Image (cartoon, rainbow, N blue to C red; front, side):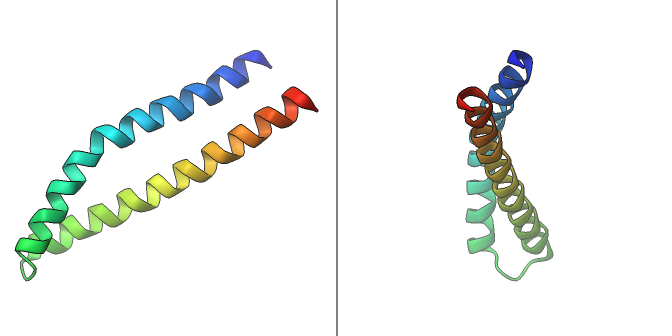
Length: 76
Protein backbone atom coordinates (compact mmCIF):
# COMPACT_ATOMS: atom_id res chain seq x y z
CA UNK A 1 0.00 0.00 0.00
CA UNK A 2 2.84 2.38 0.76
CA UNK A 3 4.30 1.81 -2.71
CA UNK A 4 1.03 2.89 -4.32
CA UNK A 5 0.99 6.07 -2.25
CA UNK A 6 4.53 6.95 -3.33
CA UNK A 7 3.65 6.13 -6.94
CA UNK A 8 0.73 8.58 -6.70
CA UNK A 9 2.91 11.28 -5.19
CA UNK A 10 5.52 10.66 -7.88
CA UNK A 11 2.85 10.91 -10.59
CA UNK A 12 1.73 14.28 -9.25
CA UNK A 13 5.24 15.71 -8.83
CA UNK A 14 6.56 14.47 -12.18
CA UNK A 15 3.42 15.74 -13.93
CA UNK A 16 3.82 19.15 -12.32
CA UNK A 17 7.48 19.35 -13.36
CA UNK A 18 6.60 18.40 -16.95
CA UNK A 19 3.76 20.93 -16.95
CA UNK A 20 6.04 23.75 -15.81
CA UNK A 21 8.78 22.80 -18.27
CA UNK A 22 6.34 22.90 -21.21
CA UNK A 23 4.69 26.16 -20.13
CA UNK A 24 7.30 28.45 -21.71
CA UNK A 25 7.06 26.64 -25.05
CA UNK A 26 3.29 26.97 -25.06
CA UNK A 27 3.56 30.69 -24.31
CA UNK A 28 5.88 31.16 -27.30
CA UNK A 29 3.51 29.18 -29.53
CA UNK A 30 0.63 31.37 -28.41
CA UNK A 31 2.65 34.51 -29.17
CA UNK A 32 3.39 33.14 -32.64
CA UNK A 33 -0.29 32.41 -33.24
CA UNK A 34 -1.38 35.90 -32.21
CA UNK A 35 1.25 37.45 -34.51
CA UNK A 36 0.55 35.19 -37.52
CA UNK A 37 -3.13 34.34 -37.50
CA UNK A 38 -3.53 33.27 -41.13
CA UNK A 39 -0.68 30.81 -41.66
CA UNK A 40 -0.95 27.03 -41.78
CA UNK A 41 1.68 26.73 -39.08
CA UNK A 42 -0.58 28.69 -36.73
CA UNK A 43 -3.29 26.05 -36.94
CA UNK A 44 -0.87 23.24 -36.11
CA UNK A 45 0.51 25.21 -33.17
CA UNK A 46 -3.02 25.97 -32.02
CA UNK A 47 -3.84 22.29 -32.16
CA UNK A 48 -0.79 21.46 -30.04
CA UNK A 49 -1.86 24.07 -27.48
CA UNK A 50 -5.34 22.55 -27.36
CA UNK A 51 -3.88 19.08 -26.78
CA UNK A 52 -1.63 20.49 -24.05
CA UNK A 53 -4.67 21.99 -22.31
CA UNK A 54 -6.59 18.72 -22.62
CA UNK A 55 -3.70 16.65 -21.29
CA UNK A 56 -3.13 19.10 -18.43
CA UNK A 57 -6.81 18.85 -17.50
CA UNK A 58 -6.68 15.04 -17.57
CA UNK A 59 -3.53 15.07 -15.44
CA UNK A 60 -5.26 17.39 -12.95
CA UNK A 61 -8.37 15.22 -12.70
CA UNK A 62 -6.30 12.06 -12.24
CA UNK A 63 -4.19 13.81 -9.60
CA UNK A 64 -7.31 14.84 -7.69
CA UNK A 65 -8.61 11.26 -7.85
CA UNK A 66 -5.26 9.95 -6.59
CA UNK A 67 -5.26 12.42 -3.69
CA UNK A 68 -8.84 11.56 -2.70
CA UNK A 69 -8.13 7.85 -3.02
CA UNK A 70 -4.99 8.21 -0.92
CA UNK A 71 -6.82 10.04 1.87
CA UNK A 72 -9.64 7.52 1.72
CA UNK A 73 -7.21 4.62 2.19
CA UNK A 74 -5.18 6.45 4.84
CA UNK A 75 -8.09 7.60 7.02
CA UNK A 76 -10.66 5.01 6.07
